[in-house]
Length: 199
Image 1 (cartoon, rainbow, N blue to C red):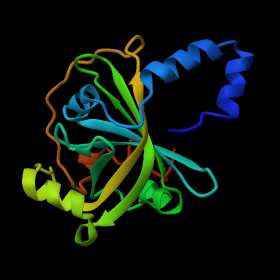
Image 2: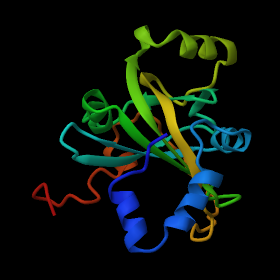
Image 3: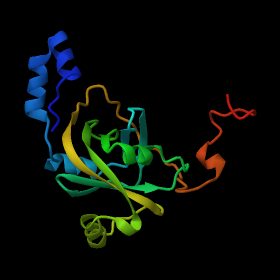
Image 4: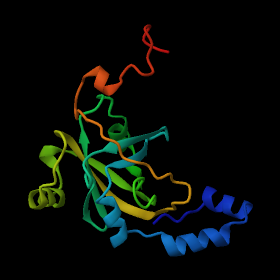
């Protein structure tokens, strides 16, 4: 787990929250996934991932799939598929330079509880996935919604709650999803782009 020094501790002192923060660390922070955390992850269709390049330039983007598309290999290791996207590879490119990753799962439709997972990420082409992931895929055959380009494997440093008090409960609506499509209308590609190419 992170030692939680420097800026974080400094602000706790300035804001007089050190005792409250320490109670949070002692009660809520783990360097592994608990059973209830695993249960939450296996029901999610969305995860938000945060990465940064070697210079600290950040990117945060969501990933989607069937419930449980983020695989729990054990209480210290997660894996998720990278499906075909816009070809920019911002997150994967950042991971090549800087393996630190933040993941946020939010159970919008039931408990409204969230889960933060921070760790070290590495991505692999299909032909070179680690043995533990390969064995998991062979044993459980989790359904993938479209062809997987790469797998990202995350070794967990920290796992802790995002409390439910400010999270809205959402209602899930029907939507036909065209996984992997290049159809601009299905992607709403031009939502922020005008006739001249930019708005």
